[in-house]
Length: 52
Image 1 (cartoon, one colour):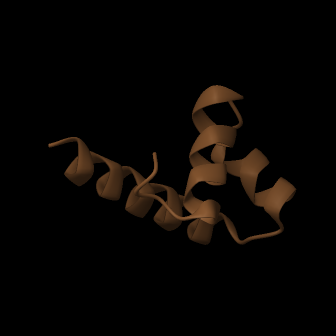
Image 2 (cartoon, one colour):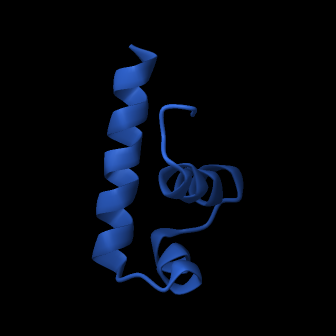
Image 3 (cartoon, helix red, strand yellow):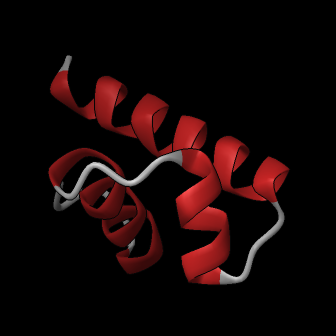
């Protein structure tokens, strides 16, 4: 998780540790749904690379 910037870390925490859906995250963060999905996907890919 240290490889992620603050925004990416917060997004992953809200999604996976607190169980918010993509739609919930869009409302909470005030972002469009597509932005939430793409940033979450990018953060997961970054984390995957770091774990390898």
